[in-house]
Length: 239
Image 1 (tube, helix red, strand yellow):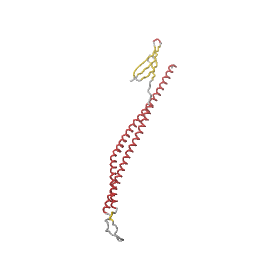
Image 2: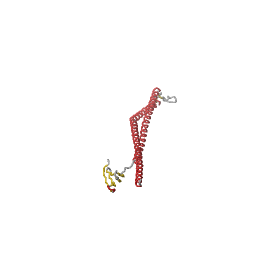
Image 3: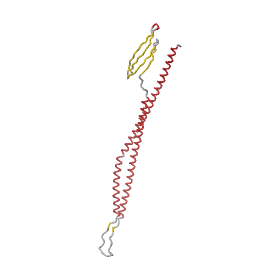
Image 4: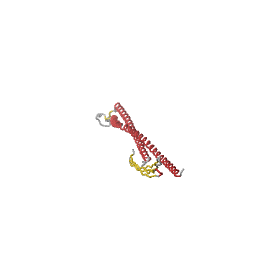
């Protein structure tokens, strides 16, 4: 085989190897970008779910506001009822002065007397106080439970929001990684030209937006063993 043919063969093989390596690297970059985009899509779905759950918990917490306001009003009424019952008990358990004794003087004069405490009325007042205290305690426990329920709903919503923010941050990182690993746009191209009548040449092309420009140099075989070089210009559109 002539030396020239060998050199051309070696050059063709070398160019083919370079093209395969370059194409493989671009394929790998494309796969990496696709993997980052897939992960970003998963995080986008996850953050949307967390956002929906957060809204549900926040609405549940806000729905308890009227209940808590009613609990406050009930607590105020219970306090007033307990205060009235305490005052009634104190009033009934305090001895009241009795009627004035008959007038007299000297060491044997009668001492002032006090009216006896009405035990039945005092017991009834105490029972009412106990009932009011029991109701106040029950209402306080209910208000505390409602407050804890609202706090728990807000806490759950906050956790969902934190998870949503974390997923959003991860999505941004994945999108940035996808952009960074995406294969860069290629503008230059080189080509070889070969014809069955021993026409041979090479050319380059350059893409500008949707326009493709190129120039090629071709050696054409003429009759009588002569050859000629010809420069060709091309212009086209990408679509």
